[in-house]
Length: 400
Image 1: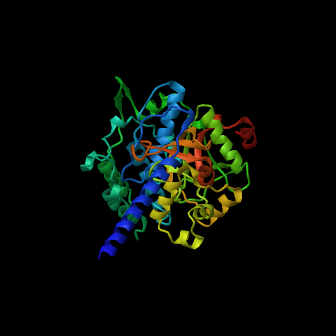
Image 2: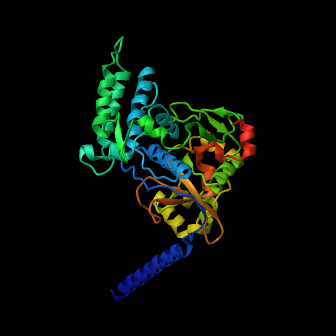
């Protein structure tokens, strides 16, 4: 019995030592950032339980553009954009008789087109997110459990001729959960319509273009990136990966920000506010395990390993071929929109983009993510940018 107790105590001590070693390792490897360039942005957003990252991140981008152009800070209304966008998307789904997707997600183009077509209002001109159904922030669970079947019922109807009444019903659902879009409102003592307010914000909406990088279309041409949430089929300018990264770097260096869309489902994207393009082979080797063991690890276990390695975690070197292969085999997906606004480096000299998220003040950096340049190069689907932020030689190649 005494022997068993002794063994148990030794095991507990060993476990404690390992835990301390892991904690010390994680602390030792936690990146310490030095800001190289940080452009002004507005407040951290919180999309909460809604699939509206495209809305929040792109409006944050436009708020930064307005701030750069005028020095004025605005908080623009995500609910206005969502209300207009979901109606337009439903109309398309009905026109296609349901043979396309209706979903919460979207793209930066949805925000740009809303601003161009309908204008915008400040956040206070509509009900606060979630307030219409007793929540403190967005919660689209009930909303879309009502909205999706409604759109499907109309789109798949056996009617030989549709009436226009379905649009009235659709608008009623949108207004009930998001609030009615105002026709007029007062801001800082002056009356506006959404269009006149947009016109007062000091930016030119024709200045914005989308950039991507794939080889299944010729470089220096434009094409509609083939993802479901790109339902408006806007064109993105196609450039080599190296030039795609030059555009982001040039933008940040010259005081511009970037409305980024890409893949955050990779193990290297952590909830603590970091993102690395993990090299699986080198990472498992550092852990003294073979690849078979590494591949069998749960996502949570892999995250523990990545967290313990911190800024020393090995990264891949992204290539154009790698991007194309991952896009074609569905590994590279379009699942999140974020807002790039700066560059920082860690204690080892590695550079990261400073990125505004829309999950509230979460993570170690209160809503800001530090994403390595390798991660962005590997996982970018496309991004919206002011064309004046693009290097002149690349603009010339694109004819813009």
